[in-house]
Amino acid sequence: MKYLLLVIISTYLMSEPITPIPTTVVVNSQKVQLGKELFFETKLSADNTISCATCHDLENGGDDGLMFSIGHNAQKGDINAPTVYNSVYNFRQFWDGRSKDLKEQAKGPIQNPIEMANSFENVIKTLNQSPYKQKFKKIYKDGVTEDNIVDAIAEYEKTLITPNAPFDKYLKGDKNAISQAQKEGYELFKDKGCIACHHGINVGGNLYNKFGLMQEANSDRQGRYDVTKNLQDKYFFKVPSLRNIQHTSPYLHDGRYENLEDVVKFMARYQLGRTISDEEVNKMVEFLYSLSGEKPKSVR
Image (cartoon, rainbow, N blue to C red):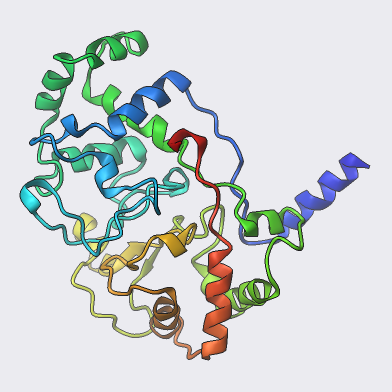
């Protein structure tokens, strides 16, 4: 009977375009602990004031709640900081996809003159003059190196997943895990075409799409073009994950909207070429609320 139930649930999950987040992830616990310390460590920045957690607040949505983050010497960035939660499931990192994985991504902010404004040469020297030297030696034979620093940070970030969202429970068979309005919102989400880009385990984060597909959306940033210099890549951005989206305002790569209702209307018009009613918008927003999961134990 138990085997039959598992088969039925597996078959159902395979028929849905969204996949539940696993409840666990395989990691190296020693690296995770070190990576956690580094994630909150301001010594990674040039003036000892900024850490990864500055722009990725784990007590909230895994971002900083700002249109553009504030970095070294109070400099303001020019693109909205994405959430770090569930970023391990993104097929690329950053809005323009310039980093292939979490390790590569972790190198960026440390060396960015607007963000941490540091160099790995200086970071390595600083960490070797602190208790971190022995902590690294216990895990890595070659001690504090650029690769080992980002390896530890990435290992910790792998644990920042948010399983057991109401919608995940619904997908696993609990029909009472979400409300009727959320069920109707999900059907609208699929029928209107949102699901074409927002699917899979991260409800996004697994492809690029043009910003302003059906109508010009006036973006100051050029997305993938900034990386490839290919004209066909202009205004193509990595589709963001919708996981925990109720906690990651403001929205879109330029942070132009504060509330989900405006985002849904915008996306319907500019990405899908559709007009939708306020009632439909409200139901879809209710569905989006059901994508908020549990904060990982590694945060607590």
